Image (cartoon, rainbow, N blue to C red; front, side):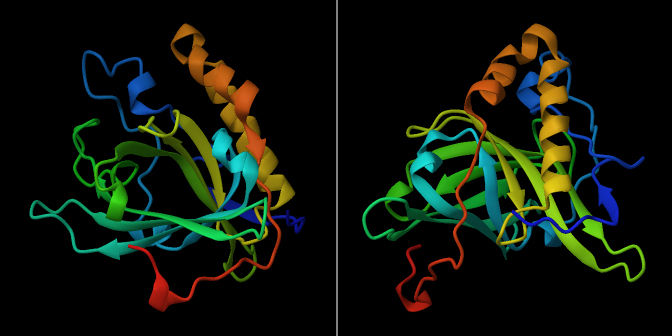
Length: 235
């Protein structure tokens, strides 16, 4: 994990600091009306890059390292909803440490919050032999760290929540755009904010709170990554 101190932080709180929202299904108002927008929507080009998964509640990552997710833009739907190519790559901790992939397509879901151009809510559909598998995931918070003098972005972070699939349980991930993982200060701040979020919801977030306490773990990172031969990519 990188240890370079951040200088200035810009993130999903307009007032500064790290702010996260609950998944829409846990929003207090969701049952009777659309949940309110509580964080700014990230620009799509913020999402379009490769992210290291640094922390996760997903048990399958206990036996993996260098888990990363690459989002690349695709043409939008007929009604303008964004679409993103979603490629997960990871290396096994056992045996030869072979590189494995899971690919799919994400489509923006504007219906849960009833807000057009919502870039925090996505529906995933598997590609290839996973064509029959679908899920839903959301961005709960995002941000970037900039150099105070130059304005250069030093690192970016994202917190995501994902619904269960046929093969995986509901869970939470923390991303960094740094291959080695986020800086100590940023990671600690994100995890602290996540803990406060799930503890502040009372009974309605009891399941999330227990999940974070029981299952949130650091994901192994061991550079360099194993890279794929693009001519042999699985789609």
